[in-house]
Length: 315
Image 1: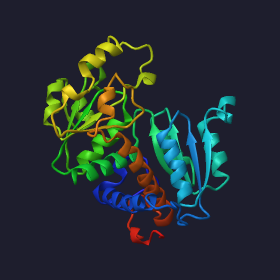
Image 2 (image 1 turned 180 degrees about the horizontal axis):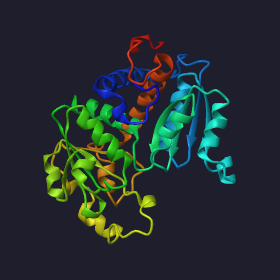
Image 3 (image 1 turned 135 degrees about the horizontal axis):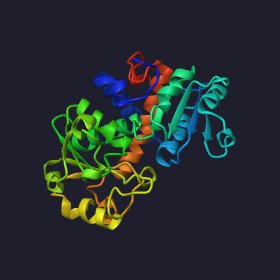
């Protein structure tokens, strides 16, 4: 397997399980009074973000620092990209500084794979256009595993903007890989062409089908990728037809959302803050998962490899 992490499908079942188990160990570290371990002392990480981010950018930065790595953050805004520098030249410049890992988010699908070809560093895809977001899939699986006791045999329904969502593409693939039955629900205008083949899931436009799910995963309306619009008549009508609130759910169903949340659009205010919502747990789990990915890349040399026991994470 590649020493970079570009897609959740790079990992396979064994790789995913190894990273989730390692993330459990780092979850224990996060609950300590002192949350820093010396595991990656002397290693360096560049976080290269060409799109806005709160959760992914912050958790990758803190994950690296809590592992004692040196972390540098570079944003497209304020960098030489604004002077016309190409992605290749940016990557080659950063590569000259010999980082161990480059974490990249970029609006173009395929940018992370390109970075892995250009750079000598290991590359982690933090989201490339509407293509992939593998660490989001890992944290979603870890959160669901903790809440449900496992995902094999469970039904997970993804609802909303399936056309533009890299979260949907990554997490649907991850849940299917780990044995879940996956349903995708959304308006016809927000489904990709040949939706079942494209997404690898059963597809419906009927919100009533959410009733069969153990877990309902609400997807953000990707307004920044919709251009001049036309995908829905209005956000108000979308909320009325495809928004998820308590009335859409049966007792016992759990809810996830990758954030940021458009409250009152794809999900109601009340449901966001309900005990059935795992949104905050997802954010917390994301830190442990990203620590596990960085640890596996730099201490083990392979995301999802098993050359070093997670029990060797320093106390």
